[in-house]
Length: 188
Image (cartoon, rainbow, N blue to C red):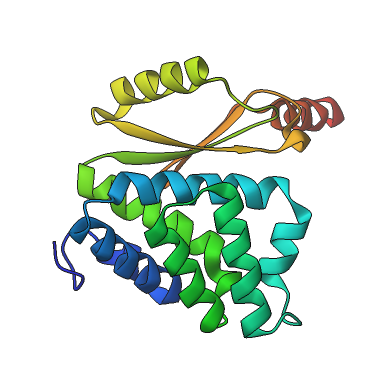
């Protein structure tokens, strides 16, 4: 797989894509694609759950050295793999930690393309169980005819149901959208 074109194509466009592509190349060479994927997923969950971690990553006030030390401590505490830990150190040194969420998304997309999978971003009001994720992936696989990786996110504002983005297709089965549609219909 080449960085210029090939499977990665538009995925590697932009700064986040280039960093994610470089990380993927290193992970592939080290036979660490899955361990990096798990570490990045754990890190993404940490960013969603911790305001302090998000502040560390996004704050322009935190200097390079302090950011590098703090992100190394976070990586140790979260037991992230060594390649991801080094990658985070490079991001801190280059003052690119703020782009981390986009890099994580791009890495997921590159891995999915490498494996011939499709990635579905699924938003639910409450965290999905492993069984629900498995059933949803199977359901979507019958719909698209390819393996589907689920990238889950939680947004209590949707109230219930699911919002699924599969490529350019958006399937909005959230209660919030249904209530808004009902309210519009009542207005006449």
